[in-house]
Structures are given as structure tokens and as C-alpha cells.
Length: 362
Image (cartoon, rainbow, N blue to C red):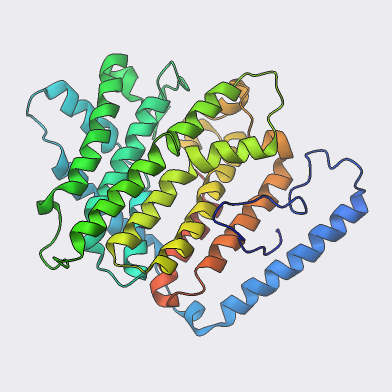
């Protein structure tokens, strides 16, 4: 496990001590082992201290929590797209992609962030549905032959395999548009919202989501990832970090931050949660890279070994499997540290979501 290293700035930084070059040139095995052992002891002491606290002793049923939120989000998603209205093929494809399953991690993060700052989860449900629409859009487009060219998603044939490439492109476009429409509609929200403060919160949340998925966020990471795929150029660690902070972490960041905004969080609370989200966002991708080389397609519900086959730069490719796992533990530690300033009972879902992202098997 890696050192406990609080984030010193809003951008996640990779410490050279925790992540040396893949080959660890010039460092002896004994020195490397001693450093690893030292940091592991520090990390375990932190975890042991947390476990001894009264808050940690409170039982939290994470499986039930996620199941209940997934059901609520699925109901909201199901109601958001008509089943039989024209254009029927487009609406059918949108529903196929959006309701195909999935863990609903991003909506759960949105709802949990709203609750941890004192808001009601119902205030953030429209945003939770919206981030899942954006996430599904990114998957539909990412699977296209001109992008990652994948035929399997969530254990089912991808959207373009079932409906053809043109409809798949338009499905993604329509989901993206619907996400903002859903957040902006007055009737998406319950009647107990603060009528004076809510409109400004919605505008701020919409701006946050737009920034995190556009040319400063998800799309930027996708572009650089495409440019680097198959390139003979060695991708440096900071470039790989850039790709995944934007391509993967940005939407997780948006999910958390807009939940906190709609819950009425203070600027200080929102920024702590932003740092938490960036840590788990990068953690999500590191774990994804590890699973891609350690699990089967059946276990993952998508094509395993895809990154290796397309010659993509990943953390295991650049750092090796063991160093990638150490980095994942460091990011988990960073995320946990950002939650210390919150009521620990209210923060339990976010803590368990971080653990889930770190230790998931698909």
C-alpha cells in the first residue's frame, strides 16, 4: 500500500516517491522494499486509527444502499425517455443504452454528495439522472468503430452493433441534450427546494457539468487518448495522468460537485469534495486498467485485453502491475482524507463508494 499523501492542490499530483519510473532504474530491490514497507506501515496505522473511531464502528449496508439508489435512479431514467413516441428507433436506442444495467456509481456519488452537505437526496435526483445520461453517451460514442471499436458493453452488444453507427451517434447526441434539459426543467425537482437559492444552484451545477464534459474535461481526455493510441512515442506519466483526469475523473468530479452544489454545500465543502472526486476518478481508471489485464470478458461484461490489443498506454503498461496497485492504494488514501471534515455517518456512503471503486472486480 502507498503513502498517505494529502492532495496539496486541486489537481492530483503523482509523487515521484510513490510512483518511480516503471523500471525503477537505479533503485535497488532492498531500498524499494524498505520504502514500500515503511509506507505500508504508515497507511495501515491510519486505517487502524479510523477503524477505532465510533463512526467507523457504525454498520453501513453498502449493498442495500447501492441497490436502493440504483432502483430510484433507474425509475427516473425510465420515466425520462418515452417508449413509443416518434422517432421510435431513436427513443428505443436511447432506452437500450441507458437502461442496459450498470452500477450507477456516478448517480450514487451525486446523491451522496448532496446528503453529506445537508441536502435531501431528492434535490439531486435530476442531476444524478443527468450524469448517468452523459456517462451513457460517452460509452455509446466510445464504443464506435471510429473510436475504441467495441462490440460488448455491460454484457450486451453495443448500441452501434444493434442499431447501426448513424443511430448510435445520434443516440449519444440525444442523451447529452436530454441531460441538460432534465436538469433545467423546473418540474424535475421536488416542491421543498429553496425557491430563492435553487435557481442559482441549478445554473451553477449545469455550468459545472458542461465544463467537466467539454473541451476542458471528458472530451479533452478522449482526444489526447486517441492521439496517443498506437503512437510510437513513449507516453510520459504526466500525459497519462492528464488523459485519465479528463477522460474518466472529470465526470466523476462533476457527479460529486453538482450534488454538493444542489445540496447547498459551502465553497469549502465543495472544494474538499472536488479533491475527493478527482482522487476516486483517477483511482477508477487505474483499477480499470488493472482489471483489463487481470480479468476475463465474461467477468468484466466488456472485452478484456482491449487496451493491450489496441496498444494503448495504461498504468500497468507504464508502471507494471504492482506499482499500479500501490498507486491505487495511495489514491484511496487521498480520497479518504478529504472526507475527514464531514459528519462521518453522513460521509459513510462516500467512504464506501471509494472503497468499492478501489476493490471492485468488474
